[in-house]
Length: 462
Ligand SMILES: Nc1ncnc2c1ncn2[C@@H]1O[C@H](COP(=O)(O)OP(=O)(O)OP(=O)(O)O)[C@@H](O)[C@H]1O
Ligand SMILES: [Mg+2]
Image (cartoon, helix red, strand yellow):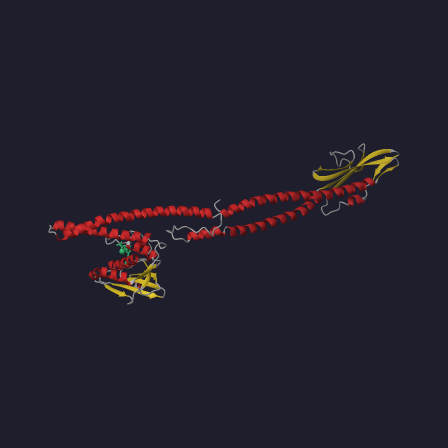
């Protein structure tokens, strides 16, 4: 059974059902005792009336059965009533011969018995009385029996209401318990929601101070597990960062040496090979730079280094300068729409540089020759929107999530990039506490990427 609520309910329900069964059994016994007492009293009263009418007449014992003795049994149940009066030698004085037999006759006093007669269950009383005659005592026994229909009816009339009352009480208690369980389990559900709402990569400890006593150890264990996991993830990141750093120097050296060879006089074949090597070495350098940028953005902890005021126009200017030649070579119209004064946002200079450069690089790279790229910086209240819009092929809505994955280049098969730019942008945007949106460019063509940053309260840098 997977549900905690259901399990708790079953464990409460089982003892309650047991208690109900016990209580039903007890109330049945008490109802039966009352019904039996009532039937026994009627039987005894009838037997006593009959016994009083036994007399000596002309030297013989005579028993008369007065109508009052049988009228006592009149009821809607219409039970059959049997009786017999016998002397001590067993001679039948009144009643039906052989009507009641097979039961023990007590020597003296009153005795009750339940047995079956003529295939019908009956209850009987046997009353034995001494009758005096001239100093002699003769014992006479009167036995009266009645069917059990009336008894059963009374038993049910007494028992059913008690059973119904107890069942209704159980149902009421159950409803209260369900309510209590739902209310009692609310903290668990709230905690579940809190954990569900966390970002997939959020391994920061969960605050257990406001939780119920029973939940705290679970959360503390979970926090310990998360901190072990964080340490492991950080160790892996550090390893990749270190590896990229180690690679940077030899690759830079290789690039420098190949640049030196640029002016060497070599045959056409060697020149072609050197050209291919140079291209390869540059790609390696770019990959290392991108990997380092990605891990730096990913490792940025907003709690340790909170965003600081940075002029957004600085990385815009720098990226435009870096890409101007490339854009020119591709005959692209590069338009920058920004205010004249610095636009100060909350962020990190190196991360903002990564965001602006990668978005602009994509726009310049993927817009066909002769196209248009527009960079805009728009302060909007306490926010600033930075957008890059191009007239290129754009990104299909179905791919707008997957292009942010590492090494994902969409449908592109050329060796122009590594598929890391947008992954860096996403990490950097997160670290700056900004938001990112992909959409279509003007007239439904091309791509528009908008990054909404928080404006710093001071608009102008000191
Ligand atoms: N402005 C754009 N227009 C059309 N497609 C784009 C644009 N920007 C990104 N894409 C698509 O998204 C993919 C991922 O972009 P991303 O910047 O992450 O990687 P990349 O440009 O291929 O390589 P890198 O940036 O690492 O050099 C690109 O390969 C391209 O298919
Ligand atoms: Mg790119």
